[in-house]
Image: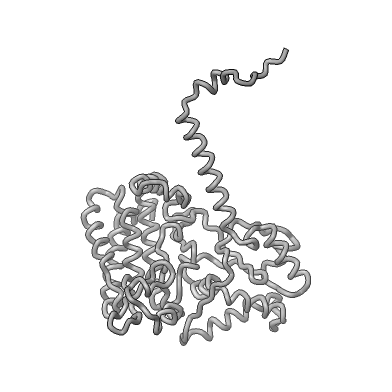
Length: 363
């Protein structure tokens, strides 16, 4: 005889006795998990999905439309595998402005374009390198290729470029999904970060690398660069705990920022913001943006490092470290303070951290 549940019969005990609040929690967990997965997948444009990207790029390569140093590995040998897209937007442009060292960069670009090393640049090679130069991140990778803390450029195929894999793509090793960040209280979020973060000596080494990157992009070979989204999600480190700038799309050239600000109408400082947090002051009388940043790179980085290096720091270091970080976060972006004062604060902070981990296994 069938043992099915007749209409109107009581629910089985295992379901009937299950508290409603647990069912609600279970349903909420499934909903949030599904939403996170959806947002993660839907945030990429069509070309940022690996199989589609490979098909489009390789079709153009086989037709002789594009060229590049990694096309053979991607389309013939199939030895190049996608990890993740650095950006889903191909519409970002920037420029370096007039720099005396641009001739060297042009030479580097031409050498990179000549994939088959025949001393000539074919139409396919020229199209490929020109398309790449329209991408802000690629231009910055070329400009910062000699810097230790920028990702290494491994090659390109058409307007697809490949960089080294950075295994830890957040300052804390991994990030809480943005959907959950909105649901978690800030105190809980901070505790999660502290739990995920590496041991303090390793955090000190990563922090030193981040401070060195700030040095590298201030009056560098190809001018000055601004970090326009100082977030823990945009900076990371490798397996040796060496700092790496994960998302160069958040770094902008001084020329690009000044071009954005020039003659821009404003009512308040917030109207003079490039990116997320590259904010200049607003001249309230002229109602135009000024050129100096309200908060320089170093001040933004120190604000990011406060929780990161103060938590778990050795007791004998706590007071002086807190004092120096407080001084650093109050730095002004005025040109009169940018040279000597900033260098002094940065070097003092680096020295304080380095003394604690030098001559140890963490150095």
